[in-house]
Length: 625
Image (cartoon, rainbow, N blue to C red; front, side, top):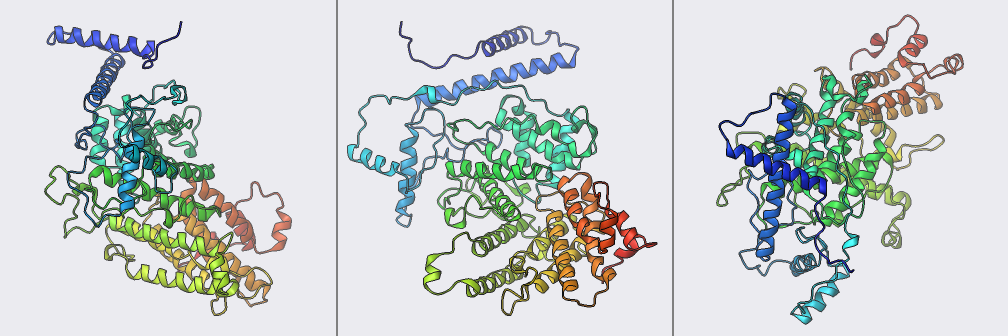
């Protein structure tokens, strides 16, 4: 007998759970004053989770019925109190109450119309629409539908077996309430201020409602946030069982994350982008840093699938819209510097997106409850901490341009035809990039300009990130190799890079003097590592050129770099590796290398005492000039 088509039945296990919850609710309502509360905390927790899942299931069913009865009604954006406010996809827009003005790009109108039409052909009735650009072949499909003007009324033949397969969802285990509160506090004070991604008020409200127990997408975001914040926690509950390594902090939460990669039929949600960013931030301090580069590629495709890369000048900037913008820029910035560090192509370029910058307003001043007022507005007397992030994005754009122009696999045929290639090309590129960097420095917001005596610790650390990242962006490509003279005529790139390395070191030491460790993304280790490498190249090139060098003076700056990296080694596995790389070539005496050919247990402090007998490493480091 041919089976009838219909919606896939709810799994038996889920059905039994809902029936149990329904029965529980009935008993409680029957005797609200006398219903016995279990003494065991675990039983109470299980009861609350079952009721929450049952309520969430009913809400989803109600939403489904509303959509079926009112197919043309796209409800207004959920309010702040709605648990889905940071998880609702960007493109679930409100209908435009005003006609489009003549100044709007007709391509933008067509793109919106195309996405709306193709959304109706989706395998999932309740999913928001994806983004389709004007180069898509579906534009012709839209043209065909425009000619037909009316639908035939026949239901589309949807191949339901191609839908994303259901996954057996293992219940997520979250930190105990006191630890969860601590980790949330750590995240928003140690990470969020340097890369704005989440909205604290909404996030904590969703936690209080128990959304992380019933929505796996939000639950994964919570776990990723906990893993990241664990880097700055001393609570041993953040470690997985069976280990006491400080490097394992947060893996107890991270390894539960179910980042599903299957058919990607479901339209990405904001949670998906936020999850990718948090995962990357966590992995960048681990021994599997390269995995983060892969995740960034997936994250960008998810963002593009929702149209998060496109501007919406006629759309009101709600809290949710702002969170999409911030997630997108976080992906772009992380991808830019990860690709530069690894020497690999970026997943997108500036030609591929036109999304607005984040608003220069700290999240404690966000309020979109009144549609008649300017709701995301920084008070004039309060220096904005978001200004740093906007200016850092602009630096990332310059770094991306340098990556594209200085390291192209294939140079543009246009410039070749004009005779601009080789040394001429490099010289013009460097002049242009130097000009852009100078303009960038001149426009750094006043509150994050370099001031070693700045009392506001957040603004001080933001300034540290800006300046240590800025110094080393252009000239490292043109540092001459052994046997080469200066690659760029009139640009002594090694001398310029060495001076930049010392300037970076000066800023990093001012930060170290405050006994602080910067765990934020784009923190100090990569910049300090690069500075040390440049200084070592400068030293060895001087020796090769038979210049008269005082080894102790020349190597002092390198050891200062190692001292800055040392505190990071406890939690940042990459910092430990960087120290090993720097330590190996710092040994100046060839006899030393012969005497210690087995380097597995060879630490830099021991080598220092061998190179300079009777002198403590601290006396070698000395004080900055």
